[in-house]
Length: 150
Image 1: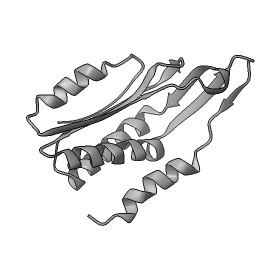
Image 2: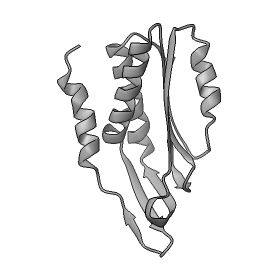
Image 3: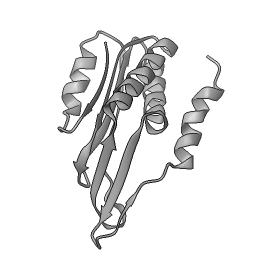
Image 4: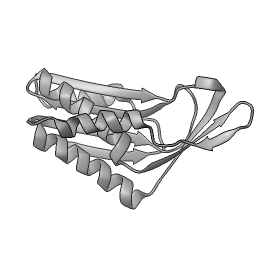
């Protein structure tokens, strides 16, 4: 099972984990990202291009299943207007062994941050708003997977 979804609606991380649990593996790993409220952030808005975003998410999920012996992978990324504390991203993996599930999960979140096109705007309590620039730290995290020989 490989799923990659872009949606406005909230997701239930617990329900997604149960779906991965039922695949019969020995390990399930997950990451749930929440909107931070740093610096008085009041709104986080995400735009995307459906014709680009969905295929890019699917491609990194398929890359993970080729690299690790996964039984399943679920990627969910929300778009639209979100508030601090809202869940924004879910990545879950299932495998016969914990190492594959954990490594694939880390790989997927790193690649999701760099290889999938989202445009993010932050709005703050003082009315200031700006589009978020790509972060060098995200590029470094994603690059570490290209440096590893499997």
